[in-house]
Length: 220
Image (cartoon, rainbow, N blue to C red; front, side, top):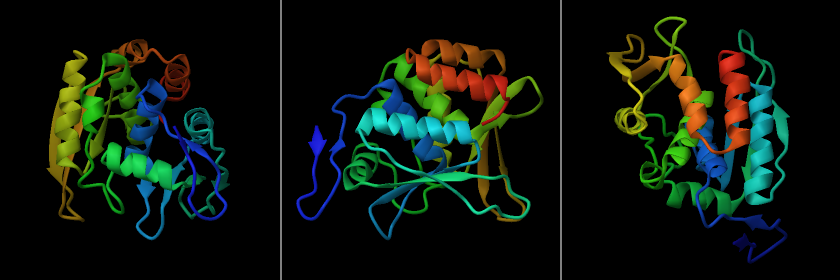
């Protein structure tokens, strides 16, 4: 489906009518490190892995037929260099908010897995997990275990169910952050499960970026 603005100049945006692996990955990346702004119909995603942000730029062209620029973020003291993509598109904004239930504004404590992802096949679920792990995941509880942590209890519970649906055994934990006095929730799994997740994903390019960044580089 092609989306066009009713008034003023605008670039045409293709909105997919079916969920595929690349779209599931994109949605997960926005849930992990993206933001739907309150002030305007703009999506922003900031990452410290240049290869990953370039892949997201590539699949935006593939999915939506839109070319979005990558902007370097001014280097902050004690921080790694990061890059951001700003997506000015009402059609993509509404897709993420209304179809995939991504909240507008601050979302870290209320984000969830979209219902359509939970009801999808193993390949879609694996692609979604790849997007979450590449933006939010890393090594946890030693060099042979990987996982993630989140401030959203609902996301945590739903991720547990998603891993179980793929027959991946996980360990869970939760704690209260001493400084912020807020609850956080974690999960972890054996390193060998990374290859299984990649193998379940039928998208060669999504599986490849997962292998190159997460398995070879060790962390997104």
